Image (cartoon, rainbow over all chains, first blue to last red; front, side):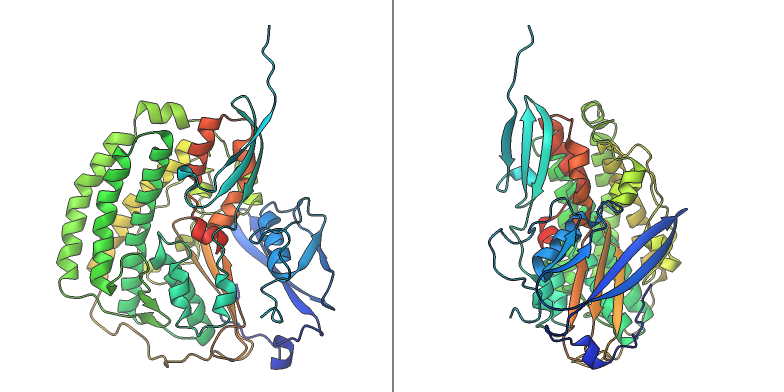
Length: 103
Length: 368
């Protein structure tokens, strides 16, 4: 696991402005005969609106609420998720609060 | 002639005593049988992750208290481990033992509450709950001696703990352990082999192991389904590598097993507390860390502990400032709730309340 592992990213990459895009981290756990192996993948999304990633709901059920939470708070939707709606906030809430340009 | 029934949709909660906080279940019943379930939450959403981006690293400790408010010590521990990872700080031995000790006491307190409310949900009208609270109260008194607070403790800090235990803490702890032995035996005699508990919970709301793994379930709920999975054993943090303890595992995955695993874990926690008392030695309680913490630019850390509800983790990303760029909380209660639908559909209304109690969720942590 990433124990205090400094990444190769420069400050400019880490503090992305919303116009440049988003770094999206996927962190999955895989169980292999009781031993944990992990997979870490980073994908870059461009733009601010209508961001979408393929859902892993049908592979890992545990992604259900977490993907909904990312949509709710970060504004990245997941295509293929059967119930893609807000989870913490109410329907009709404007904006995605965890974005850096929200507040 | 069979009697026809119409499906009926009912909202259980958000203001319902057995939903353990402000939790709503939209349930469709056919008579008493459950056809559909939709868990709805967010009523306690305070935006902890966003607030963390505006506070410095030490201040966030107080936010973590308010996540799972019945196991604040363990939340503190997970967060502090993540920050120490970011900074590369080595925690002194005495602080490690104090953390392990308080975390295990907190686990006892949390499981006692889990057990008490589980039986309350079964309809026991308060007797076992009061028995459990009697012991929990003593643990909270011990915490008060350590840090002046009972629930929102904020006892741990990045680099160690805030105060050393006062001199009268150790005799009080010994007295508690002595009394707890008989008190807990009393609780066990009352409930463990109780016929009504067995009939109501055995074989109800089964969680198969493959679904448990697929849904990322963790903690007692996962161990009740038959997987020996405990971060204290798999990836020991603080002083757990020097502790001798067993991981209770059940194989049934029903309500009784989830309840049974918690009861057995209390024995193991008490075992660890006793080992901590034996092994702890005088020394510094906090590493030499500056008042304002500034982790290196681009550093990221994942601090993970076995909390009383399951795997609790903090994922921190630093941009070199005094507050984290991103603070993600992996809360076990939220992810354990993924299986609610599978557990409830096909069972009766009365089982629904018990199953919810067996998951032992905490809304402060689900909503964050």
